[in-house]
Length: 171
Image 1 (cartoon, one colour):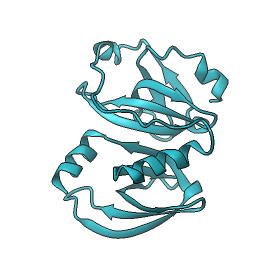
Image 2 (cartoon, one colour):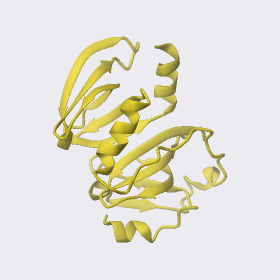
Image 3 (tube, rainbow, N blue to C red):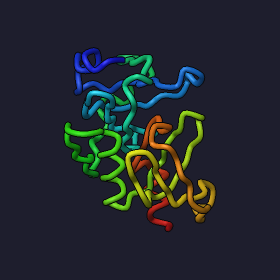
């Protein structure tokens, strides 16, 4: 979707945001909090109704958005989180700014690559072309080496999810 289409959406509505054409039963559920030229930030909620972090998603990967569905009905009045959304400048590269914010705040991040690989860890080094992460195993949260990812291979990034907050408490 393009920015103009996204800006027409009511930010007070909860949405289903679809970005994986191969897994159409998986989607983000939440409020669109910020719209940038190439990305949106969504305040995501778990199916239990609990706040499930912030996600930055490439606009070009979004192929469908739904509101007012029977699935969303029970979530219309979810409580706002007590966690502050990343404050990002509209100047520069939004994804880079989001990753820089996560690095500076020592956040554990969950990112998805173009190969549909999910990588969890803490950002160690960030530059215009490469991201280095100290990886954590998702099953027992133990360190699993270092991973180097081309910046352009990142599809989306999540912070402060239920799982990541649990991991931060345990690590």
